[in-house]
Length: 187
Image (cartoon, rainbow, N blue to C red; front, side):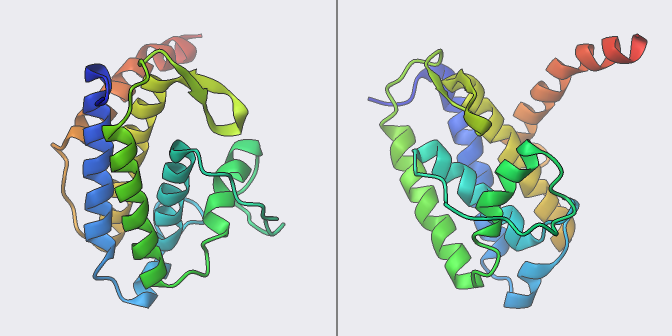
């Protein structure tokens, strides 16, 4: 069985962006992995760790058992604490460890997506234990990995993929949220 047609665009987009991330970071020297990014408190290594960690969650892997340091200024609420866990457990991994894990997760996710037989409306686990539809989960992954691809591109001075499938999904996500933002600001 293959992924449901309404999920295919999201699956292809996320895969495209993760492959682009892998291509961006593979040639980096060890020190370049520590470069600061537009994401508060995160380096190149941290963004890649986040992508790996969230893909592992999509695969159904157990979350790491780990205690976060108390001095992480950018971790200010339950959501950022949740996201930081997957990052902090990889914070001291070497560049080869990071690229190997990213490639392995990409292979596993591609296999999972090829064999996906659930309907788009199937409820799945979301961050912090909430539930969301499989379609929303795939949409948000495509959005998230494209945005983080752009964070890495900005940091590394390698612009690109502004007309990629992920860019189109990101545009749609932002446009869908716009009426709520305007209504909120209107009072």
